Image 1 (cartoon, one colour):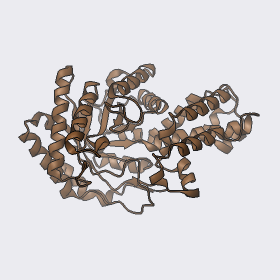
Image 2 (cartoon, rainbow, N blue to C red; image 1 turned 90 degrees about the horizontal axis):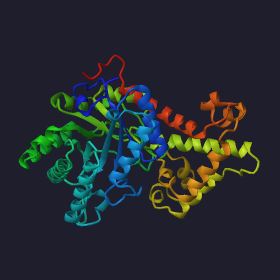
Image 3 (cartoon, helix red, strand yellow; image 1 turned 90 degrees about the vertical axis):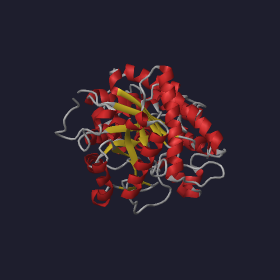
Image 4 (spheres, one colour; image 1 turned 120 degrees about the vertical axis):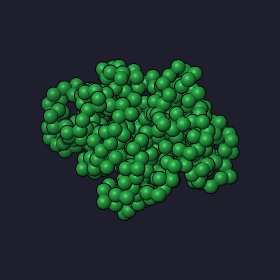
Length: 426
C-alpha cells in the first residue's frame, strides 16, 4: 500500500483517515508500529506539550529524545521510514500558563522550534488558553495571533534545520484532556459558525503576518463532533447531530476535521466519523487502558498459577505508586472507595502516568519474568483473559501478548481509516 500523506487527507476526505496514537509507552508504540506494518498504513505517533517538550515534560523526554525512541522502535518493527509520521499535539503555552503571557509564549516558541527541528511534520498550534492574569479561554483574534507567532517559529526552525516545512492543525475546541471527570449524558458539537469564524480569523491573521505559505499547509481544524468519555461512560458519535458542523467542510476544501478523545467509540462510530470528514482520529487512554487490562489479567493469572508469586502484587505496586504521588489523579477521582476504583479502572486511565515509576517497573518486570515461557492453562485464560485462549498450553511470550491486546484496541481505528472501496493515494 502506498503511504498516505497528510496532504492526501483533504483529497480523500470521507474515504480515508489516519489514527493519531498519543502515547509514549514503548509497548503501545510497538503495537501501533506493528499494526501499521501489517496493514500497510501510515503510522502517526503524537506527543503532547506536557508530555514531551524542550524542558523534558513529564516523560523526561525532549522532542529529539521522543523522535529517536519512535524511530528506533520503527526500525526494529521493520516499518518503512516513509510510513512513519510524527506529530506534536496542543503545542502552545499550556505548560507555562501560570506565567505572564510574554514568558509563556517564549517557552512555547522554543518548544515548537524543538519539535520541528526533531522532524515532527504535523504541528497542532494551540494558543487558546489564557496565561497569568488572562481569561481561561482567549478570543479568536488573540488565539490566532499567538498561533501565527508559533507558526513563524516553526517555519524558522525548519529552514534552519534544512527540513521540509511542517503541516499545521488549527483550532482548539476539544474535550478535556484525558476525558471528563463526571458522568456525561450529552456533548454538543461545535457550532458551525464558530468553526467558520476560527478558519477565517486564522486565514486573515496569518496573511497579515506574512505567513500565507504556512496557512496553505494547514490541513485540519480541531472541532468537537459530540464525542467524549468520562471516568465511567462514553458519549458516542451521532452523525445526525453533527450534520450542520460537517457541512462546514464543503466550504473549506483545504481542510479535514481532527477529532480528539475518540477513545472507546467503537467500530461503527469511528467509521462514521471518517466518512463525515474527521480524517484524524486521536486515541490515547483507550490503548493504555487495554495495556493495563492485559497486565492486570496476567497479574491475576500469575497469582493463581505460581506458588510464591503473591496475591496481585502488580495491583498493589500501582496502588502504592499512585498514593505516593497523587497529583495526576486526585482532583479527577476524589476520595474514598470511589477513588480507589477509579485509580485502577477509570476510562481516563490516569494510571498510565505511573508505569515509569520504579516500583511499577519492578512489578511489571517481575510479572513478565514469572510468566515468560509458562504454559497457561485454558481454564485460567477463560477466567482472566478470554481474548487470549489461542495461547493456552504454549510457552508464553508475555510482551507479545501485551502488544497483541493493544493492537486489538487499535484495529477498529485501522478499519475506520481504511474505508472499504476507498481509493489509494495516487
